[in-house]
Length: 403
Image (cartoon, rainbow, N blue to C red; front, side, top):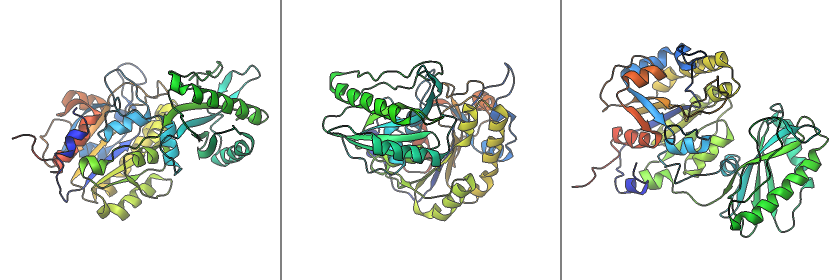
């Protein structure tokens, strides 16, 4: 795909409206070889109807075989090459909670975790502590952790997740995560990948040491893991690049953060999917493009609960009729990545896609599922960065390239 600067010269005004529906981690795998995936198992009459009317395909968030994080996976859907615009999750978390981050600040996501008497990680998520418990721990850290010459700001995100923002001169972010990604191992030491990040490595190490001492008697959250170090620099917005005014509807701070990063207005809504649909309904005439995020398909996949993920997909399907009543000109339905229950984590498998649009050729898909999209999808298999140009083209928002 050409760089985003390519599209600035092609953007074209139109009164058409577009909607990107992201069921996080919707792609999956069968429980046993030759069986059905979670999406293929679920009863999804509304998505099947949309697939039959539209054109289907598969999307690779980064490249075949590469497992993406949520940040790069969403940036790719928004048209930004994630290999050129790689952003650490800490920055997205800071933006998601509304922190007034400034250029040069470095943010990192905190996972409250449980360590045993030997300092080994026993639970990477501290039993998914409640958000109100998180808030109390954050207050405790704010009072206790001090580093001379460095501004430290700690904010609750949700459940076991928080974010820390470091402010000071010459701070850089080429640092590894301390999360070992498995239990039974010690957290990793913070190591700088380049000379200019060594100062930040020392600050982060000091922060972790003070945090561990402060939380030593708190259970289950008696330690912190730091992930996704990111230095804030301004991003080109979707309005600047594509000429579209964008609204985002998401209940989880991480996804609000990635939307803010690319210049979307984040629309307030309640915590339930039905609240998101109501927010869409109330704001439908105010934006050219909407991003609506459904989280729990991913959460149940990470839990390894196949049946619960099936139920979440069916819940997502139940929202489709009310959304279709809003008469969008172009609708895309996909996942940011796959989260198979059998793996309990993100995977490299492409996400199934429906593009319901007025000017696409028909295909033979009559149901929404990975196998149908692979065998009968008229769009074939693309990188996720190709989706935004396809939506814009069908919305008649791109000029002809060249003479």
